[in-house]
Image 1 (tube, protein in one colour):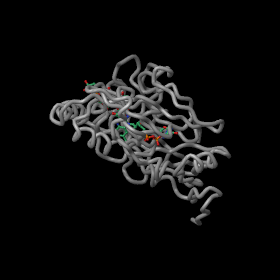
Image 2 (cartoon, protein in one colour; image 1 turned 90 degrees about the horizontal axis):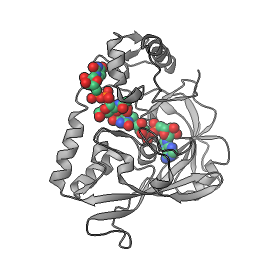
Image 3 (tube, rainbow, N blue to C red; image 1 turned 180 degrees about the vertical axis):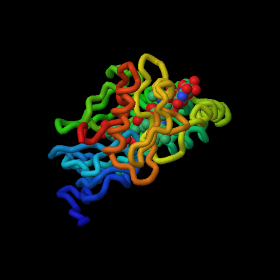
Length: 293
Ligand code: FAD
Ligand code: EPU
């Protein structure tokens, strides 16, 4: 595929298969805009766009998408974890800016080594900070909104900084509208010790021991009313059900895995089987690009 870059403001633009950016390993081509600063991000948002993070909650069509796909790179994928002296106290620190494109797993490990608590419950989530904030990713041991002080949100209309109190956030939901880009955040962390943070992290890690290790976009459905969607799908007898190269994982029924050559159509078909067989309505946790094939 041919390169198109660079743009007016220097953003790198390339037509690429999106499969390389998704944890499912599925996704056709799109024009990818690599935005490293606010000017490049603003330019990328001048035409219809989608924002791509760690690609760990996405099922993207094999035909790709017609919109620009924006990735945050450079300074928007860097982190300043120094305490802000004006906002930090003996017990609590507020960091400098952490870019939306920063990988969450490395950040969580660094915070643990520094003895800084509040985000350890998100260990094992293969997201970028922006995507994890947008979804309020988490586990029963903690979620992204446990550790946020300020969220910077960019839209085609401009940039604003909000505190979590201004958003209607909840389980797997930040209240931030789709397409509003989380460009950077400041973290709010509690001073602890590396050992204490590690112990909490181990508990959260332990809870995912039964999850499959293959290519997957994580859990397919949100837990309806606090009941495990995986348990419901399991009770419907669907573990191991296979369409093409997509399979409901034998280890945990809320995970669909790619056995090698899965297509987005295979995954959509399995989602339909699950909906038809589990008697109660369940909200999809994945995002489908586009919504219908
Ligand atoms: P993407 O998948 O790239 O995108 C998902 C959505 O976020 C899209 O709408 C996208 O447009 C939007 N988005 C991405 N970046 C930004 C941004 N900067 N600003 C605004 N919107 C943005 N999730 C959990 O909550 N808990 C878990 O325990 C968990 N475990 C997982 C385990 C595995 C093995 C996998 C593969 C996934 C798991 N997930 C889990 C799902 C996934 O990691 C989360 O949903 C995560 O929040 C997705 O973030 P991402 O950066 O990968 O976003
Ligand atoms: N269960 C089954 N069969 C299954 C799966 C689960 O019987 O196939 C049972 C388990 O035995 C357990 C209960 O259901 O008794 C809960 O299972 P688990 O601990 O795996 O938790 P979950 O509710 O299925 C949630 C999150 C995961 C997160 C884990 C660990 C959702 C949709 N899922 O799963 O998040 O990693 O807890 O904290 O909230 C994700 O969101 O993508 C994700 C992976």
